[in-house]
Length: 266
Image 1 (cartoon, rainbow, N blue to C red):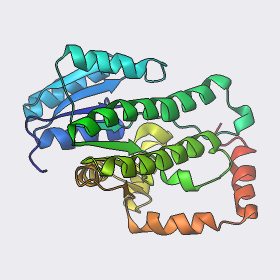
Image 2 (image 1 turned 60 degrees about the horizontal axis):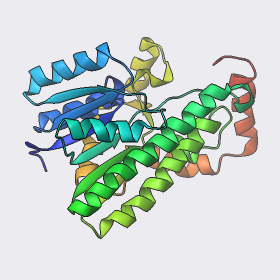
Image 3 (image 1 turned 120 degrees about the horizontal axis):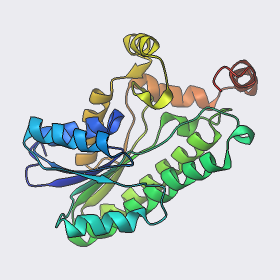
């Protein structure tokens, strides 16, 4: 599916980071876009830029995905635009590194609303369409952290674990109907999500600790289009899943004491 001319994709968190790279990968293949984000001007500028660069249609839709009615609002919007998407990429997310007891109730609710409820309801919205149509692709963003019960990552890791299990189950449910759901579980990606300073980010990319978002997006989209159930970038990340799983408690406690207790990341 290298030529996606005439097809439409919905991408959430589309105004920057991995989201804009997903949009570029699809636009380069001729796919038109519904770009969703909570921002206004950055989203509009990103849509204009993609239209000018690739000659596709890019429709911005400002939406707070933590709203309990976000799925119905998106459905109403694409309905009024006469758009029937072929793909949905649930990319929008948040991150924090903080002890759970020190995390605000508002931030905890946002993790649940954005990673769990929004991902579930948007996937369901399009799964029903794709099942009835007999084709369609869903890509949901999990994380390597879904295998990491580490201090400071309780909400991020647990909600990303939900996304992985949910998407894998949905994949098997859709398989007999010509549709699919793919979960991507990346390691570190060089975006602003983690708040790493630019000079440290360049070092991390250079040593291979984090991946370039454009390269990750290209491979994740390929996995989605092929109907794969899961994509994990890099051999080291795949190996890390095993070693993280056997990490002894004393190492996890050192992470807590050296980073969280000393307030380095707060």
